[in-house]
Length: 277
Image (cartoon, rainbow, N blue to C red; front, side):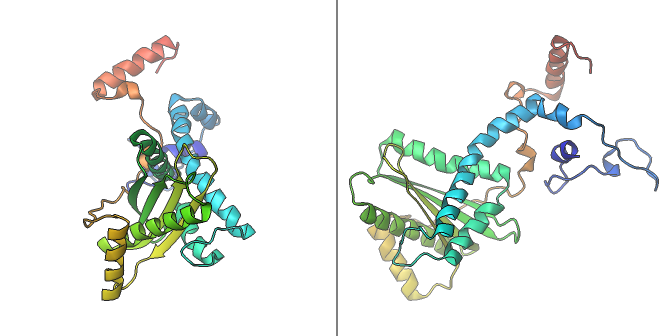
């Protein structure tokens, strides 16, 4: 059943169990049923497609680690105080719930954005680097933005000063994102250290959309200038919501091939492996 569920995708892009309407050329009646053959799951997990899926999923485990890291400190009351606000379960939960709702394929994309930002910062020898991803809440379909900030300087500043500056920059990015796209209902900000710096520290903030007063806009404008954050209004694109079709990454050997060429290569492989299709 699991094998069939993983390999069946409905018109909405969601995984589901096969239905009688999926059977090609079948004549349907009230007595028709679908039976699952024993051994299908064992066959699936040993397939090249499944191995590629497992390899692709490794990146997503960084997203799992962040959820576990933040949750651990929330439950143990060891959160770092940032933005002059005492940390509470309610404040952290708002961001953690959104993060936990992301499916495995979305987690791959989001984790890749964080990992890629850290690597790019090292390659560019820059002081900071930010990436913004816009997706949708899986339970409400509302637009959600993630801001990933990598900031160097942890080894050259006192920890408290470094964390305070980093949090203020992260907050400015989140507020600017919300201001520039009022359709975004929540902005989740995640800040991390540069790869080359010793230690480990991550910050999480979640800011909901708000009604913007002239005072709010003026304060944000000042912060954007002070921290050199998004001086031009953002034009953000949403990550496709239904991306389950890429749960099993395609074989790189098939890239650029026509259907006829792919089938010819599949037949050749089958012969080499002593199998008949």
